[in-house]
Length: 191
Image (cartoon, rainbow, N blue to C red; front, side, top):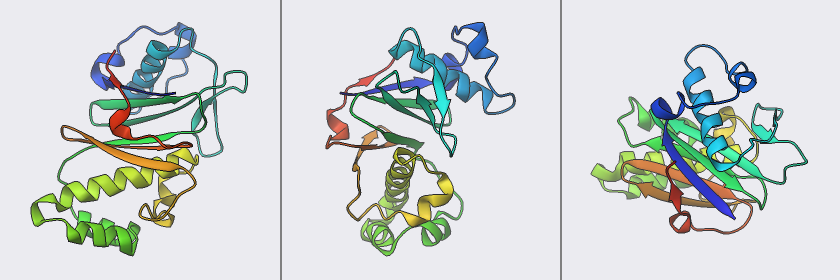
């Protein structure tokens, strides 16, 4: 089972959480996203299981909870992918202009990924950039890695996980799962 929940950071970050959990939230600009993620998790699972952190900081449930999850955010959007099959990764990005995106693609995208962008019409190249970006990040996140490892990933080549992509209006969503699944087949829930 794979389950995808989407929400707004601005709304979810004000949601109710146990005081002990709220006290764990970081201060500063990451606080609202952290709180929104925990509220989204609590919408999916009640009571919310204990959460540990992997070597690269990836949150996970303890071994006594046979579920896996991954969170992603872009602007005010936040996504939660839940699984009872194994480790998952997801990335969501709003389709938006990005200064010097061609230089970034040149630095971290493979030749195959750059060719995918070049094959797109001029008005679709930025969308192709974001589609590849989200695929790469979903792969890295499923493995528990960090964004610094994106250059080592070629999303046009076979992976140990299964990668799929879906557009949700102007949001690019990619998921990486241990078993085949089409992102278009996953029901999107909004709490």
